[in-house]
Length: 520
Image (cartoon, rainbow, N blue to C red; front, side):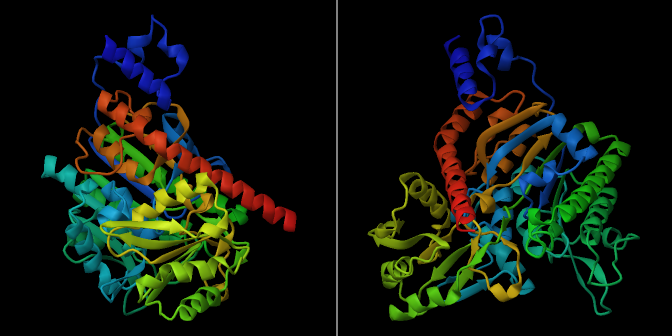
């Protein structure tokens, strides 16, 4: 009896039930039903690369709206990691862990004088090896450990660096698109994850040119997914939709181009409908868990911070930077790491209006941590939030200096013509959609409680009856029809530290945008 009431109290704290449901007449029935909900047998996980949550409210989306109505939606979901980039985001979704655990820091970094660049297809093997060497469990790996005969398929358009970490080492097939010798756009497979030839050779999968019209790449991705479903019957289908990041995000500015957002979202809604139809015809739709999320957010650009500002601080400190990863934050690897504080202070002292804060790496014995430059006047809430995000980088190959831009500011090259970016600690870079619907998921839930990408895999596995052993994230108890006491307590503990992080990011964003509006 005591445990039952403790469970109810925990559920109330994290929003699984409201106070009215805790009356004597309904206390036990609210969440402790002895009837075990049916677990889903199949998963369709759809990652809209760089999609903003506000895209889901721009127009009527029949299939998405129906999914939301019968599922759970989280309006304050965040990346919860740095760098907020495609490879790191997809690795976090798949491993249920942060870069500090799974080893994927972003697109490029320096390790023992070796430079990793995941923009190169030659690094696909390295990407898989890094995850394998990290010993981080994966969504595919844990599921196949319990169900060895189950097949897992991961795929994208051109983004092999999304599909590969999403599938991880255990996926049966990892597919993506590239140009062939004749200039056509064709599906191919990551070595070691090759499907039956009939999957890649199905009609309608080849684009006549690599220069696809808007929407075509995402539709081809769906066609490729349906080919895999038809030929391989995967228990887990993991899809990256690249066009929400490029061109909608970087080129078109994301929500700056409302007409394009509507077009792309309607296209996605139609693709979702095709997948639902295929699963319905196969007789498995009611056995399928659907998850829609993004790997990072998308922030409209209002100012560019010049690269010379960072470069000058590095050279004046008497060292060099073997690598600088630039986005809505700058991640700086120094040849002489002892100069980190000097470089950080020099950057902060420029008082550039686009810079929010600067952190530098310190080490005392075995203790490695990021500290802010003390002269910045950083709020206590943002210091706590940034420290939490920065800790996701601490895997032995982390940058020496991290420079955070304000909302709307980027360190990317202005000659790129980009209109939006991501990668740092701003709310719009971190804020992502998250919708779950299917067996075992509570219907009609709209929660403002903070959750993060590392929670996706543990929630999926828990709902599918697999223990998410070794993952950093926590099953989102609010989403589950019947969470266990452990689920509830772990989720309550996570919410206690994660909610202040999300709140701080949102408050900082509002302050930054208000200041920008005043200056205009």
